[in-house]
Length: 263
Image (cartoon, rainbow, N blue to C red; front, side, top):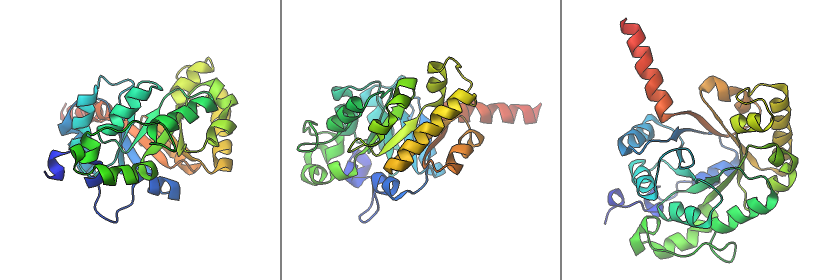
């Protein structure tokens, strides 16, 4: 079987090519966008566009595991992180077995939750992930190699998007195995009673607090913004795991721009 027919984690990269986690921990800037529709063609197109990674959204997007696996396959050598719907052991296990190079876990408010996310993503003795034979393992053909590498190469990202997370950020950021903290400005603004106003002073103060805590812990920072302009201030502050725009936003804006130019 060839890599083109499998969601084989081990064939996502050539020999000697750094994993997404390795690049992240080195502090490299990684530019991505969100994939929310179950279209392998769109995912393949975004991969060819040159993004460093793709953010597959199974929290807000209508994506089941079969669709996620097809998207990961379509992404080719572009690494994919999947945002699971919630902190759930089975959901995390299934998307990793589908071939994701890591997970993004939403609404992490306490260090115990961050610790649990790591445990669900890592094999023993580090965690408690069960061993299965699926796309990530080359359906068994690459099982031994995958098991040897997975704990070092699977990326664990937790989202801080509530005022409770801000209060506990020092403990969350220092949780062993958490590779990055991903800020959710929109939900954070809602928890601060200023929904959608991501530049409100209270939101800015909260994000500044998260930023300082993560930088002190040497934990990488990530963020989503609807546009390049929205994420630029965070990039200037040292955020490196960047997701700008979504597949639907890119399509809609492109269509509207074309139409306006023709009128």
